[in-house]
Image (tube, rainbow, N blue to C red; front, side, top):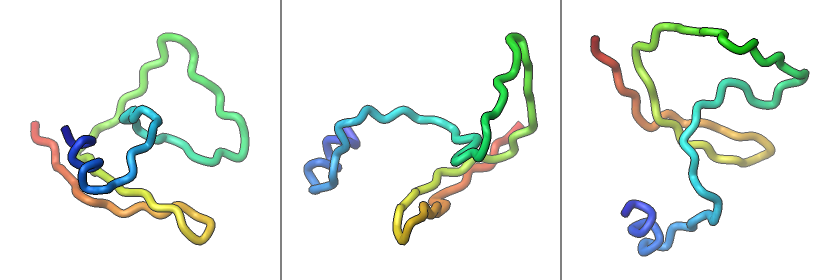
Length: 72
């Protein structure tokens, strides 16, 4: 529905499927070891945010669009 409305409004639609994700590391300068099977990593999360990315002048810039606080 959102994609269809964006297309009707003239917004470019990438043919690539969108896969929501969390970027943990970008442009690593060396290989990062993958944890062994069974590895468990946890950390407290009190909020999350939606960012827009734009590329210009040789770099990517990120702008926080909205932040949500998580309740207990």
